[in-house]
Length: 260
Ligand SMILES: Nc1ncnc2c1ncn2[C@@H]1O[C@H](COP(=O)(O)OP(=O)(O)OP(=O)(O)O)[C@@H](O)[C@H]1O
Image (cartoon, rainbow, N blue to C red; front, top):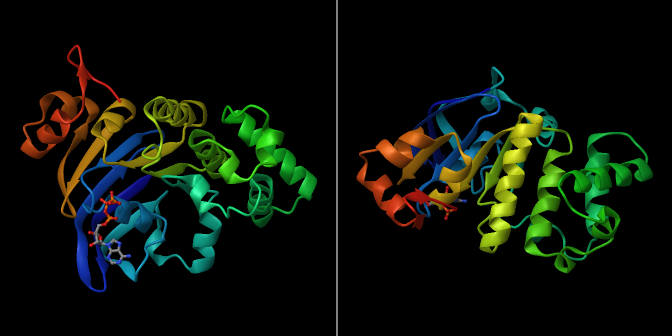
């Protein structure tokens, strides 16, 4: 469903990510792991045409459902985002305007995508919040982001991202701002999206424990290049790569198994 072929991404003509390849199937969960600055965020922003600071894909191709995304016009991108591919961030709440209630932001988001009444948009928002296991969706809609916990805000972000059941969800450090218990809940929530809707997910994380727990396939990045990659089993148990092993050693283990 998504193929990145020999992709190079440059900021101001300086290559930052080089020779990146990925072949993803529907329903797969792939993690990009690696230390800060290794280029993980750059890769997922490139997929959605959201590179900041004059970044651009200078070589290679990005195919989504056999469509060449790099040839897309702004209008085509606008239609794709939110409906076919969505993105969630480290703290979805922080992305929201603190002076506006969740319900206002959510209904406006829905109304940019379809011509329905405000009341219908509100109901749709509530339904999505409920599906993401948020109790009292009406109360959440009537809250300001700061009145919600980090975990609740992240569920709101996932609910918005999932409104149109995109085929692909891009998640940039979705659990890094959360405490360990809430991290585990959000990780499970994302895994349920795959199980219930067949959503493919790319998760960017510096935490190989999170990656190992939830993904089918793991790509380890270092200095803008793929350092190691393979199935979860390969990365956890078979890899000979020293860098991957050092990341693994940083993850606490219980009884020989490593956990989130
Ligand atoms: N807006 C920008 N303008 C110029 N260079 C950038 C920009 N964003 C990122 N870069 C460059 O790309 C490199 C990779 O950054 P990126 O954010 O993709 O890494 P990352 O692995 O996601 O790290 P982190 O976990 O800290 O987000 C950075 O070291 C920086 O040199």
